[in-house]
Image (tube, rainbow, N blue to C red; front, top):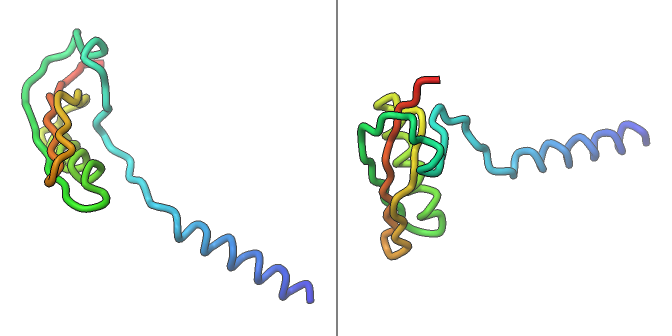
Length: 96
C-alpha cells in the first residue's frame, strides 16, 4: 500500500513538471532605455509571431537575433499586436 501511494505521488509530481512550459536562459537582458545610456547601440531587430503565442514568439525571434550578433541588452521600441504580431527592438552592447 505504501508503494502504491509513493508511486502515485511520484507520477503526479513528474506529470506536473512535464506540463510546465520550459523556459530557456537567454544571454541577452531586457532593459529600459534609461538602463543602457552607458552602452553602445549597434543594431535594430524585428520579430514576427502568429497564433496564440504570437507576442512571445515575436519577442523570442528578436531576442535570438540579438544573441546571434552578441548583444547584451535589448530595448523594445514597438509592439504591434495585429495579425501577424510584430516587434521592433534596439540591441545594445554594454561593457560590464
